[in-house]
Image (cartoon, rainbow, N blue to C red):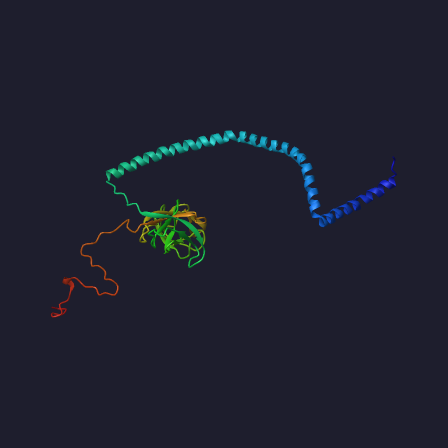
Length: 304
């Protein structure tokens, strides 16, 4: 049946208003009977799901094929890299084995006395941002554990902090990044002594180092043993310059996510012997008694 041009133009003008009316009707129907609209929507989705799966299947196959082709193209380069790493690891294994044998021979010739292994306890860490310190964690310990203040907290990579408070079931560990933390350290490459000072940032600063022996970028930082119960040689981190003249320490330990810590007791690791003729210090509140050769005869006075 032929349709006149005027009728087709009028019909074209009515399409948009009709679609608007249908959309408004669907919206009103959804407001009036939401359950009905939901059932209709789900039935429509069920009817179209095979078509969706049919369209998705070629796309998945194309992605799988593209990924395999990419892996095959990179396989040769990956094999070359792995062979180079394997050769490097084999070389360093031989070097490490030779150094270990040489070290054992030298220790045997020198009659080397190894250091006493310190005792330690392991505990689970609970985050604690309250209290006197801004950077501290709370360590849950067994009530029967003999834990004392001054213990050294280490993780698998390096120094974490020191025990400052001990309770029956918990202990607070002050992190090296806290503003209250001050530790004497040694810079291994430059052989310089310095102070590592926390400032509540992730990287403590290096202060009081020799001006003629400035820290070197990337050199290791270790403890120097100047503090009681803190032995020398414990790894702390490495030097990094935030800007010229501002060296900081990038901690070796993962201080942003501490889960488990080991608390070492180095108190009895090194005990100095008594010096001959040493006068012991008096106890608090008591008078020191001098040896007989230094006592003054009250009858003769100072000049005899």
